[in-house]
Image (cartoon, rainbow, N blue to C red; front, top):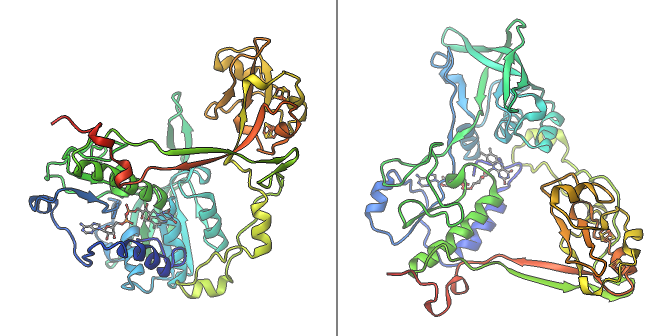
Length: 452
Ligand SMILES: Cc1cc2nc3c(=O)[nH]c(=O)nc-3n(C[C@H](O)[C@H](O)[C@H](O)COP(=O)(O)OP(=O)(O)OC[C@H]3O[C@@H](n4cnc5c(N)ncnc54)[C@H](O)[C@@H]3O)c2cc1C
Ligand code: SF4
Ligand code: SF4
């Protein structure tokens, strides 16, 4: 992984890979698959491709070739640092790009000798792809982020990079809401530098002549659920599948592809997949007692403390985030909204006394006449404006009305269930157990077997 060591220490990777190796898989390290076609000619029963997205995009601008020795593709450079091949960088560094790779490049540069490191990005600061906390970390390490600057040329003298030229732009939206970067007409800006790291995106590497179909974006044409490619024995996962995302997605896709492979090898339909296991268990212990901590602390997010900046900038292996101490961890945990504890409503038990409406601290319960969702949303005690957040609508009550709850603002405090005289509301813990590869994911008695 190119994720720098100050965020993902080696021991963590060793531990994780250890779990897999202990399952008894044969691991062949240090081998690069040069040709997918050749690999497939070996007639493996199934192949999983998890080759990531290692190819960083280049910038073809005037001066690129002349100053090539001081211009690096960010992702390759990070890999080279990770493996210890690169140990220093010039004092003045420009990092091009606004994603998390750019943030890693600039922070790594600060640790390898870059004194004057700046990030220069085309987009406005607020629209950069990097996560807000990544930008915050970079700024904390004294790295300015200059936005709305489009790179125009690499400047060089005597075969050496001397700086870069940029055009100032501003973002405007057309009538369809699409963003365009329009030159402001201000004079072009020049920044001196010794080295440039280009972190303007990545393109997945996958061979094209192996009988695997690709879509118009250059990605393998896959079924998004089964992750099966147009060659039925080839499955994808991680950044190589549906484009660069993050580790959580890569792991989830690994599980999904494993189910597909298991079913495929057993001659079953890969589309007939087991649903996840779901359980709902009441958390009631007494009238006002719950098995979960239902108090909600209104605190803002507690900041994870950082290692002393002088030490972390001197040693790339020092993990920057120290983690919470026990006291702050406790306070942070008190902010939990217990989203795993659901409000469950039993229509038949409700006598429409409105007691739950009165006590709900966020006005998220309404008894009203049913209607189309768009209209219903405007008739609630607190209008439900986030259409991507579901409404909970009961069946018809005795008066013909329905109970509507806006899930978006529920604090899972349980007060409605404490107040309800009939037990129509209950707080129930929800557990989702995603399906895994193995016997349980296969159809019983061959019921789902593929027609031969
Ligand atoms: C700089 C950077 C920082 C990131 N930070 C984070 C972060 O903080 N949190 C987060 O969740 N995600 C982060 N990501 C994203 C995350 O790294 C990826 O989403 C994740 O690693 C994808 O996993 P993967 O298994 O698909 O690919 P990878 O982790 O890239 O693994 C692919 C593997 O395949 C090998 N490989 C490639 N081609 C071949 C071949 N032809 N033959 C043999 N082996 C091959 C590679 O050597 C590599 O070991 C970051 C990404 C980058 C680039
Ligand atoms: S759990 Fe609390 S916030 Fe949610 S509906 Fe009940 S009283 Fe309202
Ligand atoms: S408190 Fe209980 S009975 Fe009364 S309206 Fe609410 S759900 Fe119905």
